[in-house]
Amino acid sequence: MITIGALFMQLFKQYAFESREKTMVTSARSIAAMASEVMGNSVGKTAGSSNPLRGFGGYLRSLDTITESKVWITDNKGNPAVISGRMQGQGMGQGRGFGYGARQGGPMGSGAGQGISTNAGPLPPEAERVIQDVLQGQESTSESFSSLYHEATITVGVPIFDHQHKVIGAVLLHTPVTGITSVLNKAVGILAVSLLVALLLAAALGVMYSILFTRPLKAMNRTALEITKGNYQARTGITRDDELGQLGNSLDLLARELGSTINQLFQEKGKLKDIISSISEGIIAFNINLEPVSVNFALADIMNRNDPYSLDDIDRDLQELEIKSKLVQVMKTKETLQILRTRSDKVLRFTISPIIDKHDTITGCVASVQDISENERLEQLRRDFVANVSHEFRTPLTVIRGYLEAMVDGTLDSRVDFQQTYQKMLQETHGLERLVKDLLELSQLQSGKISISQEVIHFPSLLEDTIKNLQTLADKKSIKLSYSIREEVPPFMGDYNRLRQLIIIFLDNAITHSPNNRGVYIETNVEDKNALILRIKDEGYGIAAEQLPHIWERFYKGDQSRNSKGTGLGLAIAKALIELLEGKIEIHSELNQGTRVTIKIPLQFLSSSMVE
Image (cartoon, rainbow, N blue to C red; front, side):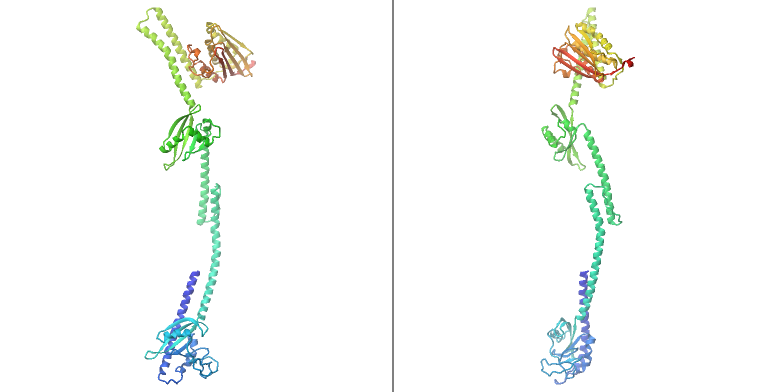
């Protein structure tokens, strides 16, 4: 507005001056035409005659008002002939002005009044510059400070031509710019007031609209900062219907949706963390620089480390196991890799897989660590079991086949030879039957498909019955079987056959692995009124300390029992029976010093009233 106002004032000033100059030029031309007629009629008069414009004076008195300017008329020499308006000049003795002879030295006259002056002397310097152009026959204008009128004026000069179109004089109009500038000053004042009012109004509107705009923007900024801090419940509170209101509503919707999404992500992260924590395998996550960044709890136990398992310890352990080079290989090939490593007494299987984003870019990798020591042990047991079963079946089958081939070939002549062959084949068949029976028994016990039957058991009677069944075997080796009951064992609920089978296994082993003329002792008592304690002690060959951990394995036979006819499944079956009865067993043995077996079985003893 200031720029437009300044431009407008400049244009207005220029227009005012140009308009004024045109008006003055028009007036000067009219005056010049009239002066030309007057001055033309005076041509030929003598030099001593009076002023040729003397009769023109009455008209000139009103030129000030008509032209709103000071009128000067000069001769063809540039000397002023007539000057209108109130001023000091050379008088004519008529008492209508103050006169002086500036260069002619004429007498001073006195008088005061409105009128004209004639022969007022030379022009002031600022008019002389205009008159020079006018006397050349050209119209001229000038804007300068007048020393005569003591103010800035506009001077317009128009030549006076005679009938031969010769310059015989000049008309000069002088107008003070005060009248024009006063209008301009009023316009400037009006413009300044208008600008001030407009600026005040604009400032008020600016403040109001800035508040209207900045308040919701500040609210949205605060909400955005709260969202960045994790406060997804923050809202802008903007209820406007304009674009800012729409933006605020969008930001509120963003916060609400983002909060819901973050909650879902945290829930999924918690579920994933729980799942990973519950996995029995160790999990290690690596970043793009192959640095471990996350592990689960199972890894520390698998790696024989205390919890918490620090990332530095993990990095060192992986360096020792030469896993880092495999990680590099997986990152390059983008293929899953499985490797086996041995740490302490464990066999560890590492499964390393790359982590690939949707742009097919590797962002890291993850390794699962599985302790397969037990699997390896079970696999070895399976292989040993198959080998042992094959061996146990091969021997009797080879014997039976040999006898059958002899019978087919006719190498047996007498009935006695046939009878002995049949007898040996029958013994081997019984051995195979016993082996198959023991295998089926062990398989059923270990599968957990056998249930415990409940019946009332009188333990002394069970023990006597068991000893009687084994007495024949003991008598063959002159082994004395004896038992003692420290305290009376009350009747209890249990499985008669399973308990009898358990006692027979240990008594049979004691008799089988004892020299002749030795003894086997059985002792029972009740502990804490809820458990039956059974101790079996022999004076046999004993078991070496290094063999004790293996006596429960299937088909295992110690050095002293290599040549026995047993299947090697008895103690494995006994172990399964004890577990089925939820009991415990301890074995103490020394070579050539005998073996002591202690069995503890929890029982539900019955009162006398319940037995009746």
